[in-house]
Image (tube, rainbow, N blue to C red; front, side, top):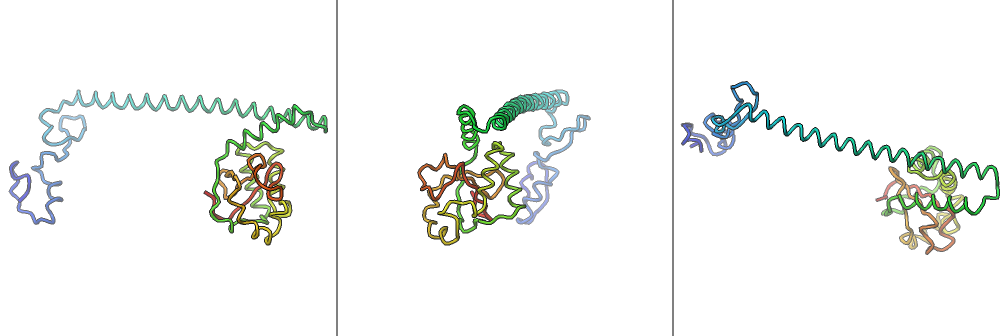
Length: 237
């Protein structure tokens, strides 16, 4: 027997069909029905008697207006953040151009410029997410030009200073790696030291940077200045 028998339902239903029937039963007091007064709202049948179109529509409009206000506030915050990012990017770009101009004008770079460059490199390195390499065997020691171009672009987009990007990409191939990594044999014999590396993820790529400033604890034959790039087929978290 239907659970809505007390509301007028006389149907005899098989147990396996009972739940479906209760949802569809026209005597179900909670069955959603459209308001016939013109507001277009769908409400439970047992609430029709107390339903007030004007009140419900007003509440609905107030709720929607509240959501619109929240969305507008969020949009304003995003616009403000974008504006700050643009300003920071302009300042960073100007600083990089100034440093580049000083380098071109004076090959013997003044200490103050070197300090600015180092500070900029540290800020960038600190902005990267720490990475964990789960499959060192997936390392690509001789990446082709296409792969290197993709990683170079990712470095640039992450805010890496141009001169650092150039140096890091020079150090993305085993021919430029330190002696502890320069051949397959030495890499295999030194693999036990890999877990000691502080690696930073290159955003969006299966690649990491091992910056010298992050790895002063490593032996000289395992690091390079300013750092080196390791590209993987898989295994970066």
